[in-house]
Length: 122
Image 1 (cartoon, rainbow, N blue to C red):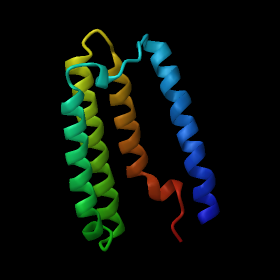
Image 2: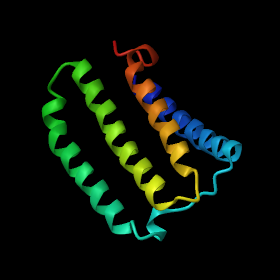
Image 3: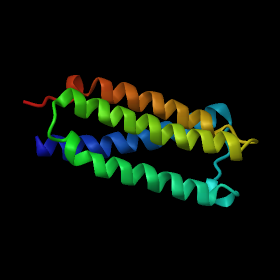
Image 4: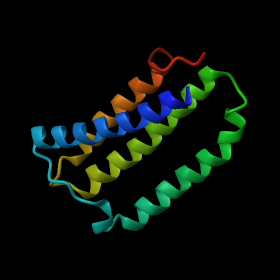
């Protein structure tokens, strides 16, 4: 099981990297950073608040049923990538970078919803 995770996670990250490059090239996205705009402090504070809330609720969620854990991670993906996408849409108007983030949001939700079929738990 641990060996599966050690192989699966790097492959998933590599797939995500190449998928992002392909999507950006396909829709003509010029990659920019939010930290180079006036939203730098909003981005930091928002991500920090999301992180603190998620880490403080994680111990309670981990003692529950696997379906609750799955929905916890789905909610985390939606909040984090939704926040990121909103900031990209609002502060990087000339870029279509928010579309890539929304695609990854949808892919992350689909992946987490179907994770029990992708990774055998027993």
